[in-house]
Amino acid sequence: MAFIIKKKIGNGEYFYLNENKRIDGKVKTKTLAYLGKTRKEAEEKMKKILKSKIEINPELKNSEIKKMENSDSIKISIEDMAVFCKRKGFVFQSGEIYGGLAGFWDFGPVGVELKNNIKKEWWKYHVYQRGDIVGMDGSIITHPKVWKASGHVDSFSDVFVVCKKCKKASKIDRAELGKVKCDFCGGEFDEKTAKDFNLMFKVQVGENGESYLRPETAQLMFADFKLVQESSRMKLPFGIAQMGKAFRNEIAPRDFIFRNREIEQIEIEYFIKPNSDCIYEIPDEEILVYSAEMQEKGLNPEIMKIKDALKKGVIKKDWHAYWLAVQFRWFKSLGANPKNFRIRQHKKDELAHYSSDCWDLEYNFPFGWKELEGIADRKDYDLSQHEKFSGKDLKIFDEETKEKILPHVVCEPSTGVERLFLVFMFDAYHYDKKRENVILKLNPKLSPVKASIFPIVKKDEFEKVAKNIFKDLSSEWKINYDESGSIGRRYARNDEIGTPYCITVDDESIKNVNVTIRDRNTTNQIRVKISNLKDTMRKLINGEINFENAGKMVK
Ligand SMILES: [Zn+2]
Image 1 (cartoon, rainbow, N blue to C red):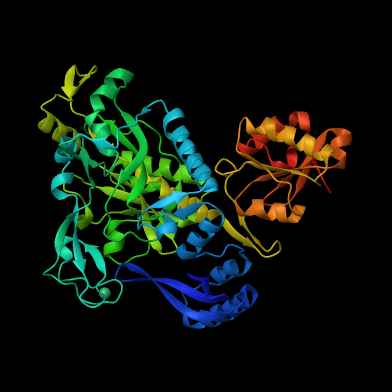
Image 2 (tube, rainbow, N blue to C red):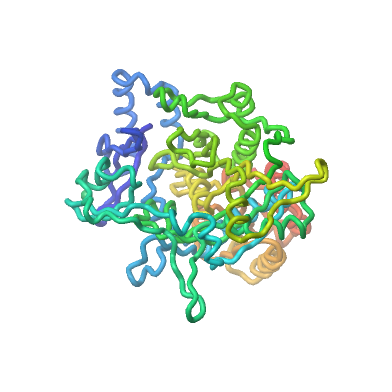
């Protein structure tokens, strides 16, 4: 699909038409045309180009062109997203005043709020709202034997290569040596200087000790498995959830916060009795399905109900179908665009040796379809490794069969908060032509700031009421108080950071003790009694009432 991107060169802005194409299994971005210096000019030119393209390119259907013409959501590039995130205070390069450190990022005032909200919603859905998952929070520096048992010390490595032509470093797999070319210039890699490179960060502990910053959160859930199970009296099937920092010394961090050296992982290990069936109903969700067979035969992914994919044997395990649907539903429930998601089965040569089947939930990023989370079957690989290396019995007693069993991990939905952050940002990002500003249409539950309070003009009588409202609502949410600039400017500032509601104190507020609430997406306004304001806000944020029914519409 073709999309417009904006490039800043010097002081000027230039618009181009780009297209993502899959070449040799990799998504490459191609610039199709230069579109001019203004967005209006660019859009008109794009229409012409796409219309002329329809004759020569039958793949591009009429509906596709219609969609592009009417849509105000223009897919921006990852570079433009990074610029936007910096300008509005979402994400900064870490240590920017010193030139930045590759692969490390800082979250700014609104970024930290969005990140915390994503984590809170994830935890609520996976831990609070289910009876079968408990949480834990393991240490970042872990006993070195944990990483010996897990295999990370011996094999968590990439091959580090340098391009003979452009001298840039890349990482490849051992098997790719001599077969693949440099991503940047197409040059050959120097095989003589190629070396294995362990991705773990080594740290000194005490005077003589040595360990690693954890490269994943998962291993702590295996190492502590029995302590968690016994103390919380969990019965199979059950899961352990964890979120926290993990570190990978990536050779070539790239794509803004997509591939970092410091990540915040968010992960579940779900344990079952070996070979037992799924005990839950599979949520009724429809998604693009891309099986190993479709990939091998060069076919396109198909829209399917996840349930049906299981029935047809496309998805082999009921537990996998269940977890894919559960995870996809979470994204949808928080406003992610379902059309940007697909599930893709690993081909045989991608499978880990202990895994019989693996599916990724993928998202259509501006730089191509990329993994969001893997739904993999790990069997008892990790628990038995830790039994072997620790000499401890990690089996649990099964009341039903009166036997001791070592549970299997049937899946480990695992992802990074930074990737979730990008998904919600890309799907929320809209440019509104009428308002001439960006509107971040985040779900109110995720919005960094839930409401902004404005006194209509800077006068004591308005400010007093507005400050009291600010104080009241701030006990529950992040609220802004904004009294500078025109109301229009204040609305625009809040649209851009995704604030769903702007509350204005005006003349009528003094007379009738009420305020107006303005809805970010529609700009509609309602009047609400100040005494009902907090309750109304709670219902609006939680999606329990429609905006139009929450108060008296202002004409
Ligand atoms: Zn090169």
